[in-house]
Length: 126
Image (cartoon, rainbow, N blue to C red):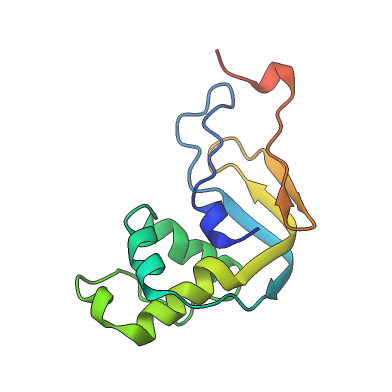
């Protein structure tokens, strides 16, 4: 599971959960896989990314030390930073582990890079 994917996942559908984002990552196996760098794609994608959630996720999987706490307004001109963001968003992959709902503590397994977000019938809110 790429951190870009993680940034889009939420557990708000769980009964009683109002703040199901961001999910905490408990990584058991993380790999870095080469992906071609495209600055324009990263810049466009960042408009849809929750930066604090990405930063925290990168830290949780051991790849956030080079990312700033806050994304400054000049990031579009900083190619070095864009490459670090590219690495975090697209190259770092959680192969095995768990996602944890920040409110309920419900865990969702990640197996072979695929998060299983399926809920049991009694867990689904109305």
